[in-house]
Length: 273
Ligand SMILES: Nc1ncnc2c1ncn2[C@@H]1O[C@H](COP(=O)(O)OP(=O)(O)OP(=O)(O)O)[C@@H](O)[C@H]1O
Ligand SMILES: [Mg+2]
Image (cartoon, rainbow, N blue to C red):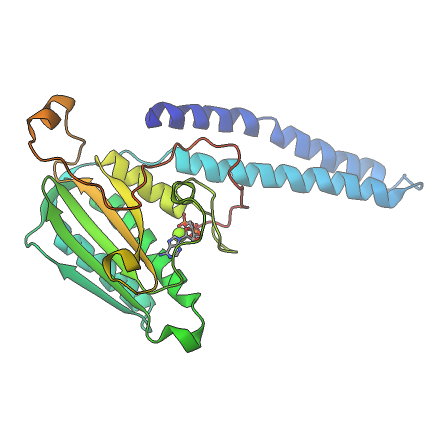
């Protein structure tokens, strides 16, 4: 379903972009050719041609950003160590944020699984980056010390990576919406971070779960993000599910990845990531 959505989006993006260049060139040409000779309402003439050029540019940037998301690379699954991947991502984020205590805790070692190391690292980095931004949003007098715990463990046939921060906590909007592309509460955010994480985990037979830090550590402030993916690198076949005797209870506040199509989604200007 997601692959066909991606192809569809790429196709639409292409068709939208095609006429943009002639529109823009025409507006620029009109401005150059007639700008000098127009005497009446010159300001309006300039304002209108400027608007066309600028808005067309915005559309192009937005479509580029969207198709970049739609064309997410297909994961290349390889046998790798999750522990090592987690430690490396944590190390890199620590270098960039020396003021925050970022700790990795590996519950089971080794933690071997089939996954695309580059994509899972990218997903984890997006989550830790969000955590650092949530911590930076806490007023200095109430923060104490910023702290992010990254805990990796096995959970039956899944790998689970918990990221718990003491930042401002998730905003009071529906959590499914936060996973949609272009939904952001941050001034400079593109809102693609969580959408990419959701897509990557889905491609690994998993999902992302958004919770409050207080759910796992009563009374504490912040968010608790749970990244889950299958050790096998793909979702279990339907018949394999029936053989498994235990039914897993999803954590409270669990949400399924949202469908990427929603025309109510707030569209933010792309700032690049
Ligand atoms: N750890 C967190 N604590 C509090 N809020 C969070 C956390 N992680 C995500 N959010 C909320 O979810 C929103 C969407 O996150 P997402 O990563 O998709 O986009 P972004 O961080 O705003 O932009 P970008 O990832 O492009 O920089 C954020 O704007 C923020 O409101
Ligand atoms: Mg983000």
